[in-house]
Length: 464
Image 1 (spheres, rainbow, N blue to C red):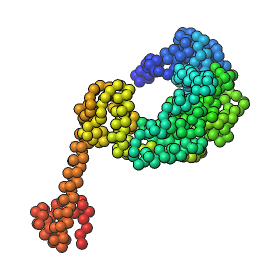
Image 2 (tube, rainbow, N blue to C red):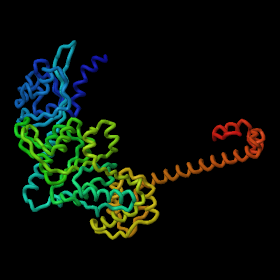
Image 3 (spheres, one colour):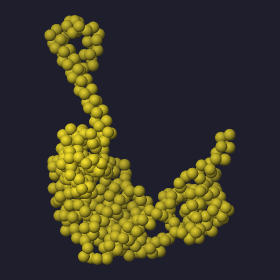
């Protein structure tokens, strides 16, 4: 019955996946095609089943097809980017994992799982093209004004650690050495990055930011280093972000999410200052200052093998670690007043401040979203209420519930601690008064002798 269930239902289940599943036999003919694969490839099931793979994908050949390569080599191909023209003549980009199907050492076919990233690639290429057009259109327009929006004046806070980091960042802006900034999401890493560029001699040059997360290796490689026409199927001559950032700053956010296979290529560019487009043989010299950011501790990124040690040492010349808001609660009042002033202007409001009770509640909160969460809270309150003073009644109910639970736990912990300390002290006094005689001490305390012995062990009291 189990085998019957699998045979009759497995293909129906696969049709609900949002990834393409394509299976071919050893001769290269399609024997299974799920619904998502049909949508990606623009071909109906009846037109695909029984046909050779190259009839369905006219732009591929024996060498460029991952399915045919897996059959030929007998080796799996994991997370490979592939661009092809489908049955309808549309250019499609997918990330494929292809695995040969074997039985008793014989290759029977291959199965491929595909994720469509066509829109991601198109959007990324459009961003690069727009940046290229912007920087070439008018040399008099400073890309700094377009992208590096913040300066050191925008870093708000009087916390000792923040002031120390601000002074260090100003020093860093005077040189061209790489800077690595770490901190939780929402702590303000981007403020420091923008400020370092704005305060540097490169402030009139380009400032370009790229998030390294959620992009496949091949796609990110083309974005960073550029592509050459003919380098791979569908490739066009396109400069990468290193070329566009020439003379300025390139900010690589979430560097710990960069695919490991791409990190040595980045290291080579940083070491010799030369960049080569994907598929090209020529190299170009670039003058780019690199700033990177991580949303976890650098040591954790290395330990979990998310970041190569050699790349880390090359990037980590100056380190800035931004503390979370829960560790700089002395800045909450300053930041709150700053955001009230900001949203008075943006929302055309006249809020004068926040009450002490409401401020105390903000200070008791843990702020998992850090400064960004605090800003969004003030923006939300001021969008809803027209008040002179933000009071506790205007704050979210969730925040009040969390604060009440926290205070309740605090009182419980304090009471238990006081009772335990009092009990221990009374036992010590009784033992001292009776020269350590447990029987007499238990009579003085009016408790059984066995109970006293238990409590002596519980509180680790040494008898003389």
